[in-house]
Amino acid sequence: MEHIHPHQHKIVRQDRLRKQGHGSMVIWFTGLSGSGKSTLASALEARLFEEGIRTYILDGDNIRAGLNKGLSFSDEDRKENIRRIGEVAKLFVDAGVVVLSAFISPFASERQLVRETVGAENYFEVFVDTPLEVCEQRDVKGLYEKARRGEIKNFTGIDSPFEAPQAPDLRIETHKLSLEEAVEVLYKNISTRIKKA
Image (cartoon, rainbow, N blue to C red; front, top):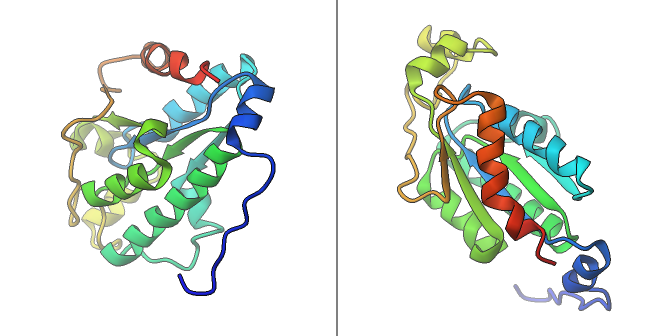
């Protein structure tokens, strides 16, 4: 971009990783509303935090309440929502933090954009693969009921598509595993990568 010249600072990511003794990355949870993304991210964060790993959760509703509160749920704004999250996640990775991002992120193209933004080597995609009927039964926020009544438009899984990942790094079926079992599977898959500084 013309007239933009990013400053090269003295302290870089590798300096931060050496000092703290662990790596940084993005663990990207994708799946339908009610699939268990935020619950899984929170439980995994607690385990990592207890081990002294620097973590931070970026969660859909929390981000839309602040940074992205001006965005709607149109396809265009959803893409912008995820683009911004990708840029924020990149900053956290540079800061040496393990980022746990829980977003529906229904489009394959936007997940690919995040992967490219943060670097494929820093991106671990978790598909929280929970059937729509199970998510509707849970409906912890009452959103599916409102979407079925037409009160919410462009709701993923009802009148807006969800493009399931074809090759996620990990697939978790929360309707088949307990929370403890799911976290154990997650931990085993990412702990070695995180502990490499």
